[in-house]
Amino acid sequence: MKFSTKAVITAENPNLSGETSSDVISPIHLSSTFAKADFESTTGGHGYSRLTNPTREVIENKLAALENAKYAICYASGQAAECVTLLSFLKSGDEILCFDDIYGGTRRLLSKVFDSFDINVRYIDMTIIENVESAITSKTKAIWLESPTNPLLQICDIKAICGIAKKHNILSIVDNTFATPFLQKPLDLGASIVVHSMTKYINGHSDSIAGAVVLNDDELYERLRFVSNSTGMVLSPFDSYLNARGLKTLQIRMEKHCDNALKIAQFLESHNKIKKVIYPGLSSHPQHKLAKEQMNGLFGGVVSVYLDADDKQMEIFAKNLDIFILAESLGGVESLFGCPYYMSHGSVDESIKEQLNITKNLLRLSIGIENIDDLIEALKSALNKI
Image (cartoon, rainbow, N blue to C red; front, side, top):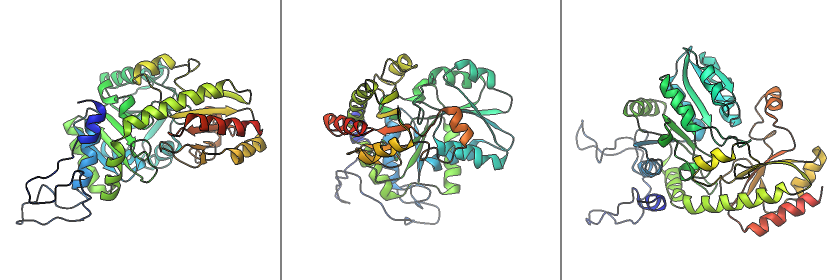
């Protein structure tokens, strides 16, 4: 089956036996616990919703099918998914190699939480493959990467890096949030584990916080499931339902996000109030060729841009930008914009922001599915005000 078909019909099984209602879509199972026939058995394989829940299984099955995976486990947030992954496989004294340009919340988790457990994190530029190979030591247990990264949209060669990890018998963990399984499938490229903040494109409607881990390896899955059950950071039935509903339209939304984003990037690149546009779909992007090969011919719905503006002019732009909403997060049907310096990377140390060139005139635009003419006109009008 093709992607859009799998997204719609996977795990939707109307019961025509007459024993229950024949819902066309899977219902929400809000029950926290499930009746037992005797001491040892469970009904329908369920006992307690922290462990398994019928509604959560729907979104897990859908996501696994779209990632070409055997297993998916869904969590209360993307950060929870990251946390459980690290808790499952790392111990004191271990080391993680991490892409230096990653989401600020991930950096905060790795550097300011897991450092308390004596887990060392080293940040490197993974756009240069040689950096990865040369950085591995006997203590390296995992390689953590995003592609595209947040917020600078850098692309790394997932297949090559995962190949290096496999050669050294270490885990490769890929955050696939920005690309989604429609644009790229890291497991097919050799990744051990894929992580998602489903809050973004998978949900797609800015009405749920959710995360997921997707994988194929039986042993890794059993360990992850055990730690998930033990820590209890699972996705609620109602949020499971919202994400399963959102996932059904992922392909059609991503096609529109990507089409709008490319046109906006092209418009901004020609505007005299713009210093630099970052978008993998532009030939000016340093990893454009790799992105074209790795991301299904599309380039995502996020455009990052440096305005030729001082602090006051940035405020003028923000106050005059219509349609786009100044807000955290991304990936919804509505267009959002934010300043990573204050928002997604607000918790990152000043010296690191300077090193990564995350400045006050950098904006991250999450391009929605509105009419492209309206979006461009809104940007043009706000830019003209400065």
